[in-house]
Each structure stands twice: as C-alpha cells, then as structure tokens.
Image 1 (tube, rainbow, N blue to C red):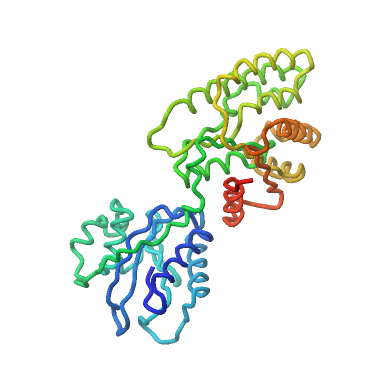
Image 2: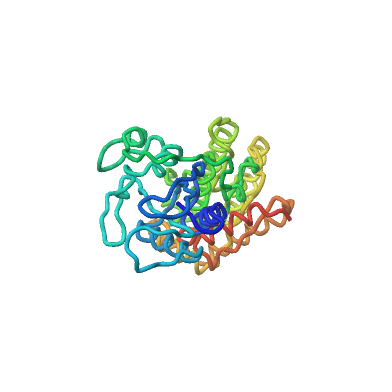
Length: 367
C-alpha cells in the first residue's frame, strides 16, 4: 500500500482497518517506509506491505481493494502512467497463484523491480518465493536494480486485531444445536488468533449412524461412548500446555453430554448416566467463556441438509427443539457472566466477515 497525498500515515491506517474488516485477518504488518515517487514527479510516498489471511477469491479481493481505494479518496484519472494518490492498494501475491487477466496479474509483475515493495515484503514473509521466477524475496531484494533510498519510519501502523484479542480468554467453549456452526466458528478463531483447536470426534463414533436409525436401542451406548471420548479428549488436550498457542478453543463443552443424554435416554438410564457424568466432570477445566450459537430450527435443518451427512438426513424438527430446550435449561443454571447467547439465525459468519467480527465483539463484550 502507498500514499503520497494528504495525511499519508492516516490514509495507510484507514486502509489497514478496512482490509481487516472487509477482506481478512492481518497476519503481519511491515514497517512504514518513505520513498520517492517512482516513474513521475510527485511528493514522497509512505509505503508498507500487509500479510493477510482471507477466504475470498482473487477477484473478490480485487473488488474490495478497489472499493476501499474509492472510499478513501482515490480518484481514477484518464491520464496514463503513475500519478499522486491518497491511497494505492496493490495485490502482490496470493499463495502460489499465477493469473493474468485484464483486471489482475498475479504475482504483481513489478515486484522484483521495486525496492519499496521488496523490503517490507521481506519483513512480513521472508520465505515468500516468486512462483514464476522461482527466487525468494531475500534474493530478489539483493539483486534488484532499483537503487531508491528507503527511509524507515519510527511510527508503526496499528494492527486492528488488537481490538479482538481473544488471548486473554484462556479457554473458550463454543456450543450450539446440531448444525449451528460450532466447528466452523471454532476453526476460524483458532486460525486467526493462534488458538489450540479442540474438535469433537463424532465421526469416529460407530454408534452415531445406528442411533439415528433406532434411537431407543442405541441411545445409551452412544451417550456412554461420547461421554468417555469427550472426557478423555478434554482432560488431555486442555491440561497439556502448548507453548506455541495463545489460548484454547473447543467446539463443544463437557456439559453437552448431559444435555443430549437427558433428551435421548430413558429415566433410569439417565439417572445412572448423570452419576457417572458428575464424577468425571469434577476433573475437567471449566471454560472462561461459554458461547451458545442460537439458530432457528428451520435454519438448523437447512444447514444439516446442506452439509449432506447421510446419517443426519432423518433428524426431526422436534428432536432439535428438545436439544435447544436442554441447552437453555443448562444455561439458566449457570453464572450468567460466563455465558453468552448469540443469535445467528440471520447471519452467515463463514461468508460474511462483518457477521464474524460481530460475533468476536460479542464474545469479548463485558456485561
């Protein structure tokens, strides 16, 4: 990114914030460098490079970058060549993608010829390899013919991720009904915030497909096997300290076992199950914050249909309603400061970053 009109540093900061809010998480931000205008007469630029993690396509990223430029005051001119601008956002590279269209060339064709790109790029990703030249950025920087003098600025751009710092929450449990999006949210959080990810191992349970075919027969062995597996996983994964992770995020909480068992088991079975559960639960760490993702029954059924698991195709709306009631009965019995219910019935946090950031703010909100 570059700017040589108006408050250059402020322009860069606004662009960083907009990219974070609309495109993806800022993994790393380089230092800011002042450099002379290249290819035309104009004021000096402030330049920097961002390393961003995004789930968007290259065309969508380009569309967002152009919209951000326009919003921040960049005016399109009919004059060919370079000119002064309030903000300039170039896509340098996306993974190892090689692409050439009228609107976008990847990698950017001028990377190797611009010192003001190579220096900050080497800071944010020194292992980056040019997918066409097959030379890494460090060697490109050493060989470039650009002899421009770069002046490193003492002031650094602020990383907007700091407003969403989940590391102060050592253990986050994300709960919800079947198809609510627990795993998707936990996975996104673990990726964006360097969290240790704990995912329920439901795929390995041999009783689950049988349960959906004959609940009365397979409910007890199913719930017992889930109880044993969840207990073992949480006990091992949460207590095992990881020096390289900032926190833990799980797509289930231990109490899930009791909630489902109350819905699926006969009274005598449930009473026995409850005794075993409470003995085990005493040994498990409790989450700092418990997130319940609420979705309407209609939306849950649509989500279940879309993910296409054969053993879930016959789930009845009434079963989902009973599970939801069980969760709310549990939530009412817990200290409310540690519980956060987030209604996502009208959201799509996987495709819409605005919805995702809203959920993060709700998680961090202090009551």
